[in-house]
Image 1 (cartoon, one colour):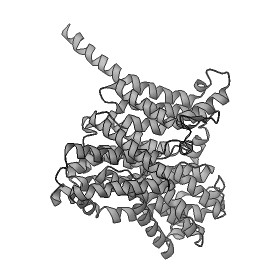
Image 2 (cartoon, rainbow, N blue to C red):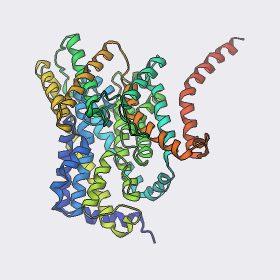
Image 3 (cartoon, one colour):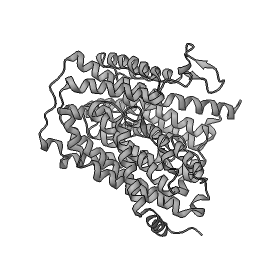
Image 4 (cartoon, rainbow, N blue to C red):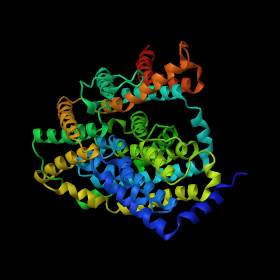
Length: 501
């Protein structure tokens, strides 16, 4: 007989609310924030590095600390994305588009504060949904095979239309370039190397984090040097604080981002990066201020960050219930479960309720600690922009290169950063949109994997993809996303013509 949620929460609070667990939860979110700030590390690397430190801890205490690192890294990555256009995590890339523009306008404080607040609200809502609906969403996730994931990836690729602006052909070409860059490495289907030019370091593909550091951090820095170093930003204290208008404009994006992030986070392997991009694309379609996106709109910061946090919590549905990782970091955490002698799966909620519910309750505590830690510090972090650029730019370069080198302890990562720094600089000078390329790079490998698996399962059945009701529904959404704007424009042109007649 299933226990009610209230009883499970009581069990969780009793297990998590001890002095040791609270202490290590705080240590985890603090370390996670620092790890997120350092470009190139990321939550998956941070968790993997610190697993040996926790081997002497009780399993619940160890998992609480590691989960704290996971959540802390999400916000830490946003700090550098907003302040210096250097995303520390793949999921924080999209926050760079509007967050950095807000910082350039002297509104880094509100950008950081609304990121922390929006992420906290999304975390609370998604955790309630996680606790109440985990078994239900796990059943749905079981129905997501390769063809359903292929449909999701097609929908993701179709959002390139949203990011392309007025020049759709250019956006699609840049998105295709991103997909081609993502194809570098070993072919999923045949196991043969593609576009590696004999370079062993490319067999694993072009490293995503290093590409992002180059495109955004080095590319922006070179562009600023070309324009000429601007004076440091001197925002007044009241400009560093959130206003009532900021909160009003952020309410709907937080709600939309939470829903998008939670739904995508429930899918095995989807991770948080796709959720952040899809949330931004949703704002491009539905926000009242969609024309301001990319120019420093607060919706472009809060919606992706809300989606990231909601997805990071939802990632634990397939991880705990199915024993299948929801993303890269939860894959590392899944390994930690096995190290501690815990086997995730459908029976885990019944066999070890104290551990499962104690871990879930710690998410509440960890996100509350993050809010209390980072919300008051947002104006303090924003003061970094008062540093003269003659000192700040060398710091950005050193941090970016060291962060890239630390990923694999390889100079190859440094060369990737520098090469894509030049690519990012060229794209900025030519006014090319970067988001389609990043989206293509993210989705390309996932699309290829799902396509190969679907082809293998379908065999000679050309309609295999369309025999899944879930896949057909998702493809219909993709078609609507592509054809909807054109149909809307055509309808608006016809209406005035009929009125004139």
